[in-house]
Length: 106
Picture (tube, rainbow, N blue to C red):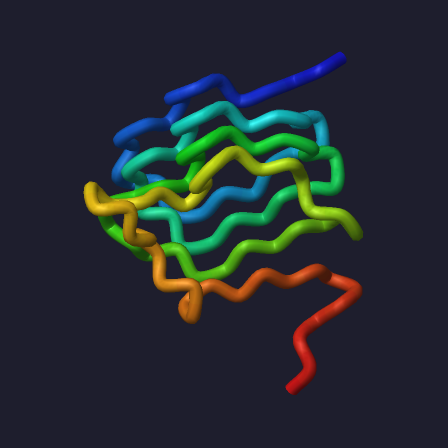
């Protein structure tokens, strides 16, 4: 069974600060978590596709993204969003992409 989080499912839910998805989810729709206050995302190995602007937010609080898969999912254009002039809304230096078995070297 292909379980997914629909497009715009949590769009504008400003009280949402952390996302840890259950292993039943395989797809995250476009703009699913748009304009939330998420600072941490933990994605199980079962997630294989993330839609465009899924985690874009005007609040720019995202700091940690953890993939529990050896291979990151297929990602839509600008899953973290871009501004009106095409600039990144999230500073790449503030996001640390990690995998539980491949932690960054200190």
